[in-house]
Image 1: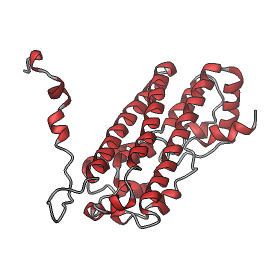
Image 2 (image 1 turned 90 degrees about the vertical axis):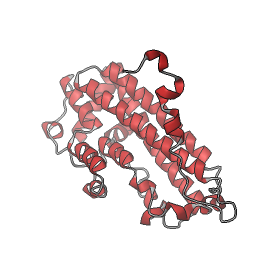
Image 3 (image 1 turned 30 degrees about the vertical axis):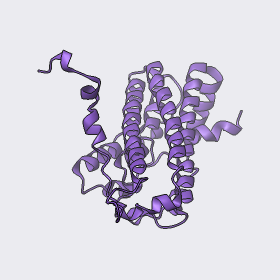
Image 4 (image 1 turned 30 degrees about the horizontal axis):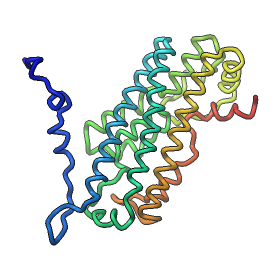
Length: 269
């Protein structure tokens, strides 16, 4: 058993282990040292994975509290997620200090590695309702990642938890929405939109929660847009690493809201 007096900042946070994780693959042919900008590239993406882990943690807590009819506690986690997404976008400013020439100096060493392979970001997409069997199968070679994605694929989404909560609060959510196949993408529904309009007209607290979910949707879309522009700024329209289509693929993900009903009602008021 560890003596509490032996716990230090470094040992608690595993700083030595953390700082050993930035292992560059490039090497200057003259000096043997890694290319200067590879360290930044690794650190930024490792930080992204840590933030994705926290976002999943917070959204799971949000869903748990909705399922237990405690929207105020869940709303606190949602507020935190919104702040994290602002941070994710801001980190792109740092990455964009790397010029195309600087990225090209080590890009070949990435080999088949690609951000397209981020299992945690796919988990986040699934949790928000953007599910795909094709994406899940891409991770079949990694048992942990595949198990996590399979669970997310089969579990209800954030939106499912929200509309079920609204139903328990007395709002008219149609049975086919409450019992829908949760493995399918979330789509718009006229009757859900009618219930949301009633929420805005009669329940200020719940309308604030709707606005927070809209903020989350907008935050995801903002991050996607900035990510596309960062990739295009860095490699133009070249193919991405790992055989991905790079910016061309990323552009197809733009302007696809995760909560379409919250956007559909905007023209009603």
